[in-house]
Figure 1 (tube, rainbow, N blue to C red):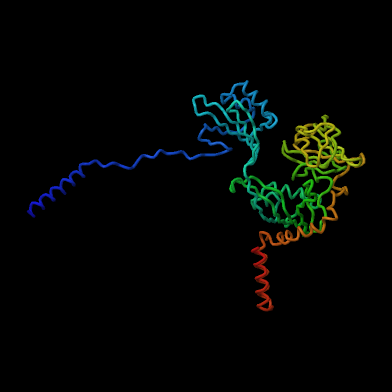
Figure 2: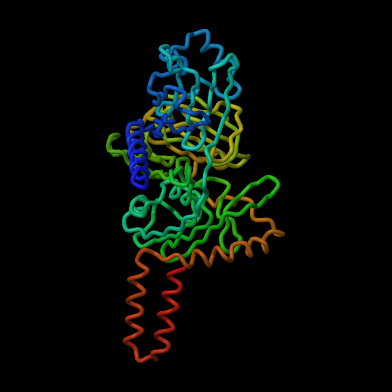
Length: 447
């Protein structure tokens, strides 16, 4: 009986194992469909479109660009008319990038036009539906503060290049110190420190420099501080003052172009070989600059002339008050007309070679009481001083900035300090005093 039971159990187990082997295995691995990663830019999922990126080329127009992407003339005219209050389609500029989002069907028809004014600002023109609209946007920007210094060996431009300083910062300093330091006559050994803002898109893409917060410039051994300060909280106006609350600005800019080279100064006894070495007075100051460089109004005033003559070429004249007038010659193009009121720093034209000139420059002429004079020899009025009631508040505001500037080392600071420390160690002074000096020096350097 027992033997029979063992045989039956063995047969049952064998048959179960065989059944299990014969049963097909069902795979639980189901193929997963890949979902494309969303690429969001300018507020659109780019996966939904054919994306065309390009830059505006010479001869391009808004209409021609859209026509090349299958938008017909009536639709182009409708778009231009509906968005004109937000986006002037006539003002797209050569070199500016743009993006077109097109349908993914066989027509590849444009639906969205995105124009980038600069690294931060862009305009979206959406015409994919019957409702056409244009909206201006700004990319999120992170602002960080940067501290740099430099010592002049050849010129300021080389210092900027060697130290990775945005050229706009150099231009900004030349504006701030325009009437304190002659940036056209800097000397070897002059040095500076500057604290300024830098802008970044998405925390990593450099988007240009911002305002200068504070600066220190040492010219011929004399120090000059400058601090940005809001002098009117209601109007939001700002200006630059020194460490004693004195204004650094004058009613006039130093020159009509930013950080250009003076190629010829005011000189009533100038002799020209071309005219037989005769005396030909030069009653202006020539600033050499590339064609197309913006020419700036050096002070507030009203345009009294915007014209052309054979000698002056295209020129503009501005009356600033009953005492002073200025004139700007040889322009490529003018940006103002008679009767326009312009503010200091406004672009009134662009450098050219019109009229009697052998190279691109602007001849800047300066009148005082109806007579042409040398602007560099005039004691010009200062800009509005800081309000007396703000002086104490201002001095309190700049105190930590003075300390911050003083703690920024110059590029040769380490070598100078090492020599100084070596001299201290070689002297018979006590070891404690030497250590104290060394520690103070290193601490100041590391701040």
